[in-house]
Image (tube, helix red, strand yellow):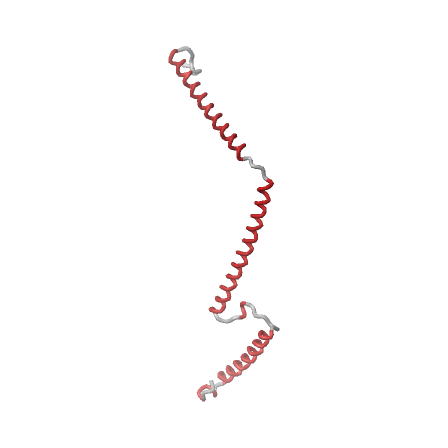
Length: 135
C-alpha cells in the first residue's frame, strides 16, 4: 500500500494505520505468551488447519487418558475378581447333579404320560372303560 496509486486514498491510509496498530498488539500478545503471563486457548488460534490440528491432538490426549483410566478400572476389576474367587464356594457340582436329577425327573414324567396314554388306548380298544367323554 505504499505505492503512489494507493497512498492518496484515505481508505488505504486508514487500513495501514489499523494494520500497524494490530501489529503492535500482536507483538505485545506474543511477548505475554512467550513470558508465560498469558496462556492461549484453542479458540485463540487462527486458521482452520491449525484449529483442526489442535483438535486432533486434544482428541488423541483424551483417548489416551480414557485408555489409561479403563486399564486402571480393568486392573481393579481383576483384583476384585481374584479376591472374590478365593472367597466364593464352588457350586458347579451341585448344579450339575441338580440338572441331572431334573432331566431324570422329566424323562420319568414323559414315560409316565406315554404309559398312561397307552393304557387308556388299550382299555378303549377292549371297551373296558370310557375315556370320560359322553356320546
